[in-house]
Length: 317
Image 1: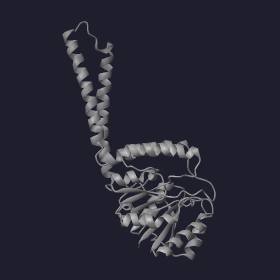
Image 2: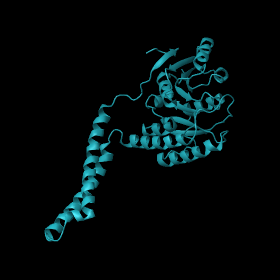
Image 3: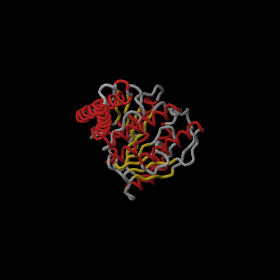
Image 4: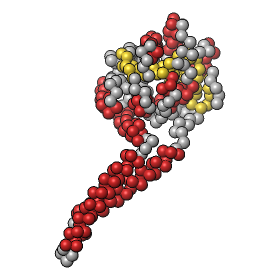
């Protein structure tokens, strides 16, 4: 199979028929073999009913239905597990991403040999309350990750199948899939300017300050896990040793002063005594945290376990 189109769906029953019809037209025009995997993330509207109707009319359409809302990262992760295409395309269900971009994204993966290509919505049709925070977090992520992308959170992306089978997306880390891919060893990451269409149906389900704050926390988490997930002692150990040495050195200095002036020098009256004590305790705690983190990292079960109510056209297991 050439292409897998993975689409997270949350209350988008109005847009799904038009979107799937558009995708089917593009696939037929280019004679691509394909599948469309629609992941219903606990929608409360008629989305799953619409997916059933679309599946009945087009066997290329497949579906996964969560029992409740888990979020976009969970939907993408399950879609990635089910995808069989040589190239995997992700896009949003709100029709703000154009399926006409798919052939060029596919070409960049297969012919230009990119591991991943991220869309860049250079001209956006979003309110300022959404675009300004987005620009800030994209700039921050680019500087921290050293990946020269303008739009990390664009839903329209293309991947080599090996990439999506090698990464795990959880929490709300779908915004930083390029960073996760890089830490997994896939370094040829490209970018393509894509059309950002005005929303035709409904309203946006995402945005706001809370989203931005969560994004920064996710970035910090990904950066830590990427560098030290398999060797947490390399992060906590040096900090613990440094704090311990500072505390021990200061304590040794105080002891020497006490021995030189046993009758006039009082340890507990010196602020440096409490600083030394705090540093030694903190150093011990950091070192022990490193040991515990090593044990957890070697024995942690999978994070992604979701209740799936139904599947269409996919292996029920």
